[in-house]
Image (cartoon, rainbow, N blue to C red; front, side, top):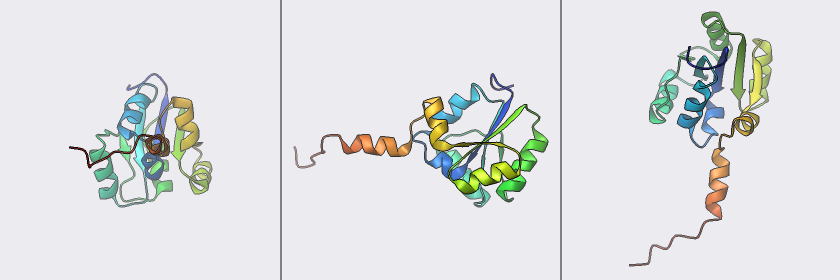
Length: 136
């Protein structure tokens, strides 16, 4: 068992991209999730490239299937008490309902787990002193 909770956690790829440090998010979530992975309708290489670039080790991924089929397959493969899908929009919420997963918008998940959203980092950078490149 990876974590301290009997839960399978799936991130929609676009929701994961909204987080400032996906690698840190996965490391944190491993502390309280048994299985964790990424779901997307994008081609497998897109998910693989993103996870490699961000040093994310996942227990499952969607592969060449659609998101609904992927979530159903994960549920069949991993036997846990809870199945939580972190998504980015209303379509993700509807999908979670259709396949009987709990849904959590990425903003709420970030707030609850103290994860930083990428937009938060950008807005903090906007307040920083301008960098001058004309100094010796």
